[in-house]
Image (cartoon, rainbow, N blue to C red; front, side):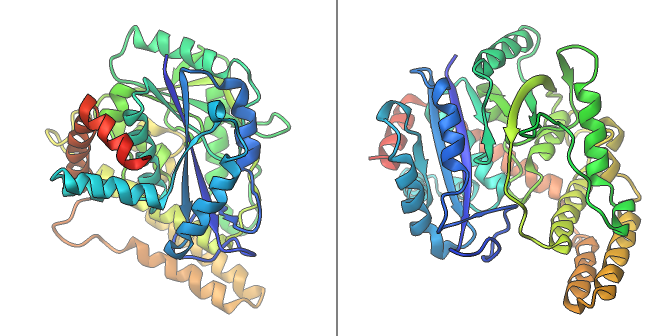
Length: 402
């Protein structure tokens, strides 16, 4: 089985981890090495002629594009050619755009971007297609693969699923360096109304508990997903969604009757650096993703999508954030957090917290996030079908990496 291992990596200004106009959870300052080399070292035992590797390098600001590519390129240059990942950064994206335009396909360029998690994951699906991979394995640069049978286990699970399904996806779990799958919960009164980590942990416990090796899952983790070619050519990540793209992908798949399964034994060690962003900003990102996804659910109607998805189908996470009480829950959590900031004398943070609630404004009349996604999906299928043509594939690869 031919695999493409895709590792997005995110970078920001030297000496900082928060500057820039794009939000990433914990971008690496360019004056440090970060976690990428550690991740790549762990992948060396998995290298073979059947395994290709891609590193997609993104930056928090366009002005850092060249510096990011040069820095990541230096890291990759330390690996022998047989184990060296291909680098896809801003220059390669520009070449891909130019190729599409030269072939009279400029409409595809809007699907090809380094801005946001969803768009970056889509680039990995495109690159897997160009490399003729049977399966795209989605990883992250803050992970370590410790299981020498990681790809063998993937192969076994995919073979089981492939005997029953034409379209399907597979996910695994994260574990800490200590082997824990549960995540530490934050503190603060606002958490009572926004128990995201508690509900995530409930989902992880259920998925890792007694039961079949492969079981349907309401969520997936973007750093441990396997997407077969039939699925990555059919379904894109939502390019508009800035984060939460992995769980949203499972929801979108369900709308088209595509099941996702989880193998609790398929694990990667997740060892990220501390998140540099303040609580109010992380809460903003959560609210944006859940509000957006809820609007997508509310726009469903028979005939528009093959299978209607309810919040209860995604229980306990993310489903509990997609119910009718999302707005009330957001007001309660933000009010309490703002009060906590005021009590600490941080007026600016309190104001920023309450400003998050503007996200809850109704979408403009006549707009539908679901219709927009379906339009992107139709264009996506045209793009991936076109890129899969042997003559186009060969020409595109030459254009990107001449």
